[in-house]
Length: 342
Image 1 (tube, rainbow, N blue to C red):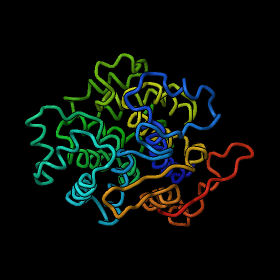
Image 2 (cartoon, helix red, strand yellow):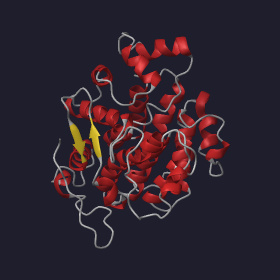
Image 3 (tube, rainbow, N blue to C red):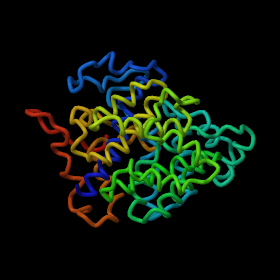
Image 4 (cartoon, rainbow, N blue to C red):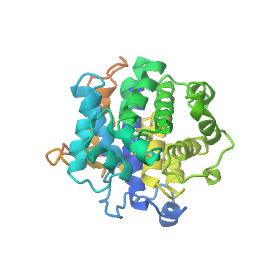
């Protein structure tokens, strides 16, 4: 599979998982399958809980802001990313994590805000940095293991002062990177865990172990390590993109983020064409604070194209304008439309 298929799968897959999971956030386990018992029947992009059908939440909105900073600044410009986050937060998005909101609005400079928040609260191991990591994982994958994990930690630290969040985001980056190299990310877990800070390695080894089940989690899946563990579990215990997303949402709790992380991993693993068209057609990503912009599938594909231009296997050759026209289409289904930015 070409890396551009995997890169677009990671970006779009994360957004799709986010939009599907949003309406079920903080609901009970099994709610998704109870409402949609027959896989493939359609209607799953139902909206609810304040979300329109197909609307992506803060998870994807922040991932887009990271992506656009990386592209427009030509690299990792941490003050710029933080400034974009602040502009977005000031526009009162529908959803924003309490910790993230405090860091972005406490008036402290970009390089102190998260650290000072952690010093006071001692609670900063939420999944808010992991949820937005799909785009940066694609961008830094060609740079290699050390560079992608370092970038993940630095971006995570903008809003999360607890190193647990840094390490979880770094693991996600590395799993996406090895998947782009046609390596099984599950087989790469032991080597990846060896790169995790010793103070956090054991907790991640526990939740990423083959026999672990999310029901064994000792913390809510809004914490970074059970969130990542749940996403890896969903990938490990299913055989396709759709089933992985269903399994993630059916866990209940922080369903948008668990499904977004699952979608990033499963999208990279199975590729763009594995994502059902009925899920990508209504997908849209509003960007509060950015002149009413709304990104749709075609925009996300172009974003993935630009993020992955370091791969050199077809990116930049019209990828964002054509690839995905028949993605995930069931027999007899019409190809998804590619509306322009709203």
